[in-house]
Amino acid sequence: MTSTDPGTGNQFTVLGIETSCDETAAAVVRGPSEKAVLSNVIRSQIDEHCAFGGVVPEIAARAHIEILDHIVKEAMDEARCGWDDIDAVAATAGPGLIGGVIVGFMTAKAIAMAAGKPIIGVNHLEGHALTARLTDDVEFPFLLLLVSGGHSQFLLVRGVGDYERLGTTIDDAIGEAFDKTAKLLGLPYPGGPNVERQAKSGDRKRFALPRPLLDRPSLDMSFAGLKTAVRTQAKKLEPVDDQTIADLCAGFQTAVSDVLSARTKRALNLFKERHINTPPVLVVAGGVAANQEIRAALLQTTDDAGARFIAPPLSLCTDNAAMIAWAGLERLQLGPVDDMGLSPRPRWPLDSTNSGVLGSGKKGAKV
Ligand code: KG4
Ligand code: ZN
Image (tube, rainbow, N blue to C red; front, side, top):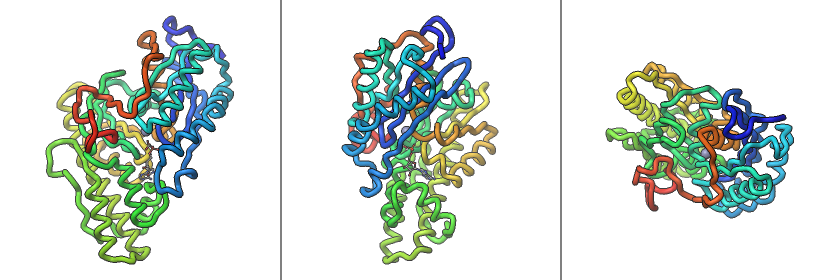
């Protein structure tokens, strides 16, 4: 296969690499005029981390090292690409678990240098933010709700590199709250799918669980107190029986869903105030978007607000390398890129003017 030279045409082919958490992934994407995911290879490390009830950074980094070159080869072979067919190499340069980010970004730099291609250091959040432009041709501006194990935030996406974080969690990310709630109830990692499974046979009204921060006017969220409320109820009834576990899962899931719906309603209102002539669009990304109750609630909320709801297919909604390749491609088409001097970074807010994410503490890496 062939592609147009960088900067001369409107078609690029980019190899993407993603290693910021517990997925080792490589993908080849072509675009922007004819958008195509030529390959999208992902290997999850869930089995390695399951025994510890969460992702262990050191194990993650070692697992990336062991397999990344095979994953890249698989992605290139599946796409039927040789190095000559690639216009650039894009890799996640942060934010994320730094060991894994170093493995992915340094591997990408080495490939770029050996193949004589430009390297693009992609912000993982930008990958999530721009995916809907690959899958659904979404125009700027739009609203993004990112709900994963590491992030929970509303972003106003105005253009490539032009983001405003409207609200975030002040403590746990939503997926993290699902995982911790599952763990305290004795359910396996990853917690989200297991909590959802249990919730199906549970009574959501049995326990009165809080909807944190909903009385505040901002778009910020908090989930640590909700998880603690589940723990407190479970402690009172120890040893908890299966029905109690199901009821707590159902109550927890509905509380999360209520918080997200209320915040989404407010975020859409804000969007409409700011962009009166743009039909409002809500894009949802991240593993928590797999949750059927949450998805249905978000769909209802966007419907009520007269907005369009877009959830990219789950394989592109959770962590993957196609989104990294695509974000690289969007930057490439704006002009030449050379991130050889860029260093991997554990923290990297998309909205660098928002001081809340700088430094450590409650508004730290998770946001
Ligand atoms: O986006 P993702 O695959 O990886 C990152 O965290 O970046 O998201 C994983 C998170 C985990 O916390 C997992 O428990 C949660 O998404 N998750 C779910 C569901 N499936 C995955 N949470 C709620 N309901 C689900 N069905
Ligand atoms: Zn992610």
